[in-house]
Length: 201
Image (cartoon, rainbow, N blue to C red; front, side, top):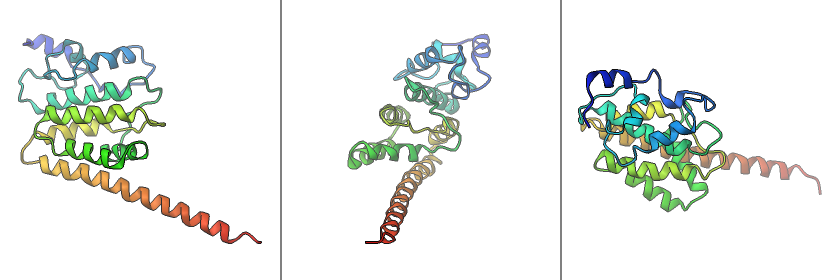
């Protein structure tokens, strides 16, 4: 579907969907449903999504438009039915995915995340990420992701010169979350042990 200049100008949003409050009548559940319609569709071809873009170009090779499209779709699935916001500044993708290991098989989560990170094209990557963020909804509380940062990552991911850098970034986030989790558990065990040793017989 080809958009003329006026349609593009009218479509562009002032800020991202995830930056609005959940009780905003214009950007509530109906909006989340609209962006979910973009799943499996080419960026820029879903009229319901146009108004949620900050950057919208008709060129299929426009990295920013592609990144926004997929981030909006992911957010729509992630936020679906959640009573709390799933976007939080500074919340990393890798850290959020790591938390799935508390509910699902560690090997299964590792394998799914690794398939996402090593995807060969953006559609394959988006498919894997969509499955992962959908699983995040099963956790309580639902882990958040910085979706504005994800747009930047997905934009750079499309650049052959930067794709490995983004892969390393996500891998580092995932690994760091594991280290922090183990450290936290170790500290908790040490405190429990110290508490027990102080109890008189």
